[in-house]
Amino acid sequence: MKRHLALIRFALGSSRRRAGRTVSLGVALALVTFGFAAVLFLTEALRREFHLGAQGLPDLTVQRLVAGRPALIGEDWTQAIAGIAGVTRVEPRVWGYYFVPALAGNFTVVGVEADSLPDAAERELVVGEGRFFAADAPDEVVMGEALADYLGLSVGDAIELPVGRGRKRLEIVGLFRASVALWTADVLLMSTAGARAFLQVPTGSATDVAVRLSTPDEATVAARKIADLLPDARILDRQLMNRGYDLTFDTRGGILGAMLLPALVAFLVLAWDRLTGVGPGERREIGALKAMGWQTSDVLLARLWENLVLSFQGALVGLIAAYLYVFHAHAPGLADVLLGWSSLYPALQLAPAVTGGQLLALTCLVVLPFVALSLVPAWRAATLDPLGLLRGAT
Amino acid sequence: MNDAPPIAIRTVGLTKRYANGRQEKIALRDVTLSVPTAGFWVVSGPSGSGKTTLLGLLAGMIAPTAGEVHLNGRLITHLRDHHRALVRRNEVGMVFQEFALVTGLTVAENLFLPLVPTGGPPAATRAKAAALLERFGVTALAQTRVERLSAGERQRVGIIRALLGEPPILLLDEPTASLDSTNVERLVDLLASLRAEGRTLLATTHDQRLVNDPRVDGRLRLVDGALAG
Ligand SMILES: Nc1ncnc2c1ncn2[C@@H]1O[C@H](COP(=O)(O)OP(=O)(O)OP(=O)(O)O)[C@@H](O)[C@H]1O
Ligand SMILES: [Mg+2]
Image (cartoon, rainbow over all chains, first blue to last red; front, side, top):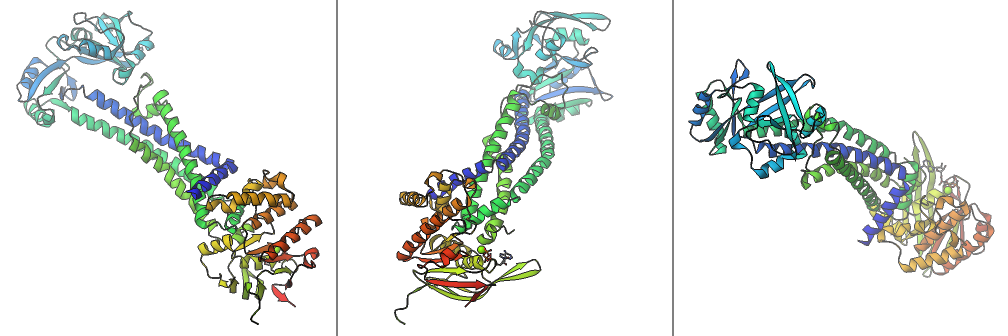
């Protein structure tokens, strides 16, 4: 124990003495850790966000495709689906995209039935500023904050938008909370009646049908029955969608991770260069230590401590920087790559969602190769004759 | 010959050949010698005659091409790395021609460096270090980094470090090369007192002050790697 403490003190002194080497390796280590950690933090947070959001999705969503394009669904479908065993609730929904030339982009207009309006507590969770729209007020809408900012609107303002030949007036009564921004960035939420008018969907028709099942695990069976009954139906399965998200994020995260591998390799090459450049001064030092009776293992242990401390410090700095970058600065640049979204989308408010195991694995991925690498040159020098080292032998 | 003194350092046919690329250099040829316990011997010889090589072999810091080294009756030539390090720590102290100090560390840190793997210097060693620093007039330099010292100051630090380990056998490579007469006198006094404690001393030197000192018991001469005379 005393031996280790003395060796650690010596090792810390050594890193201070070789400040140039220590700093450049520490910075490189921090950068590599930062890269991997930022990707990990962001993918995990987004994955969690999607799973949370997907919980609110219906078990099955049924759309109708005519000649490969989405078409309106009539009441006959709704009734047919309601008749299938295991279906507990069928809800025709009205939503769609509304193209805004000024934005060169789409709003997503979503209608909510008067009888399925969220309760007060739920509304509170969703709406940050202002209030939810009233069930019998087809002009009232709730929109995303970023979109409102972009349009220069705030709660209480009204806009008129062209619909068909006429124009439709919308009054902004509320803004979504930032915490649901990932889902609501481009959404205009209004009553079904308002959405019908806005999207010109006739009464009795719907954009799609949300289906709830008594046993959500049997979604595949129910989907099969619906497909048999209604051949031009397209059916979205929530559980499959969840898996799809996971796959997408794993793939994108994996690709980014793979893009970072060259950085890791470059770092290891730099480390190797810096470490094998055990300069004449350092060789003489190892020679002197061995000449005084240090064992090869003492020399290596001191070197191990020196590099363990250095690499943990570097990794810690990288982790903290990545945390701030993702969860406070909202990962500028990286989020675009990972999401492929336009800049209209708001800054992400992500909740940290990383496990200790992942952090540990990440740290080891960077620290272990470095520490292992660093021991080789020291070991090579430490096994030479001390007198030869003192004379500058190589 | 019952009362012949015990032998502290003995070599038999000691030979060292350096392979330098395609060239070979025989630095030491067939050296057989014995230094009795509590002897104070000096080895002189021209530059390049193999003096440092000889001491390096005696201290187990290089391996001989041929021949044997016995310290206090024990053959150390074929010891493994681990045990040779133990010999260097416990049995022989060496003062290096170029001091072998670690730059960036202070004088005090350098003095206690050999003790780091054992957990640092005990109080007795600290007291002894203070006394030796005092004796060689370098107390004021204890917290100075060694790269700021003059050659003579470094040499004294190297000597003090070797003495601190209280080795039974002390090898000194040109210990007076950078010392003024006062410090040569102090060193020889000290060496004489160590010999009186029963320690064995072997110094290499060019320095006539040392070679001719009346307290020296034995004189060897190396010429071109071989013992002369
Ligand atoms: N590592 C080495 N490789 C090749 N030749 C070497 C090596 N070390 C020493 N020599 C050669 O061996 C010979 C003896 O060297 P050594 O250092 O023992 O001499 P020395 O008597 O101590 O000289 P000096 O009085 O100058 O210190 C020299 O000719 C030297 O060039
Ligand atoms: Mg020499």
